[in-house]
Image 1 (cartoon, rainbow, N blue to C red):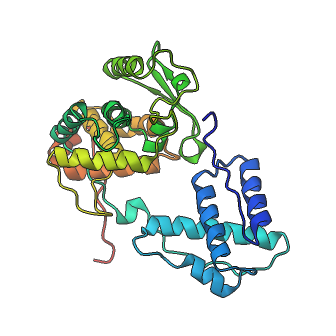
Image 2 (image 1 turned 135 degrees about the vertical axis):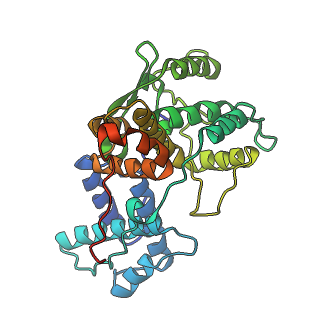
Length: 330
């Protein structure tokens, strides 16, 4: 419970090589948490087919897209396999490299679902009145969901950043949340509002009699790390209770869309206050834990598309916040 790092036991003919590859990645600073699960599944498949050599046919079989597998998951799986093959080649084991998959980036192919403020209120109300599970009476979900949704919406955290929080990461005196080892191994401090700080104080008092620094903020009934998939299933239930339709797999709304909603609503508030949004983008970028400001700029475009009346209201004072795209083909 002190360490949530997954250490797979490889059993295929390539067990030693897989272990050495995983060890090398972690030695240079990569967490390789979700990646280690993928390596474990690769090892299991190699055992099932009794593979003794990574031939081109085996590589093609390993990289074939599975039924129901998203483009992003497939691309990640192939990328990790390719990294392992490159590792083998560097160490004298010549193998074919997987073919590159298409790049399915958020900014090019996906438009997030942005909740309205009324919808957010309905979701939070549903979470506050969420009943205990009859099938799982010891589950903590009815205690966890109200505060974790407020955290995602008020601070724009990623779900795995929230689930990885420990009690020592919550500074109630200063109203600061410390994110350690976020995406891209990002570490940052995230300020909380007074109301959210108070919610956290009440939640921790309810969850723990005497909390220890290393306790998870959002533990399972056994005190272990919650799986994001379980939280997502409860979120789907809350959408239904809130009368918010779901478009099916890949169409959302997704749990991660609450983070997108935080960004758009934050920019909307800044625009309404007449702030120079481009000057404040670096601050929002840091707050969100983005690798660069370009990852944050897409929210400015999204805000202008959703709230054109707001943009018109301040364009005279601030100039063109979002430049028009010139169609050079025309």
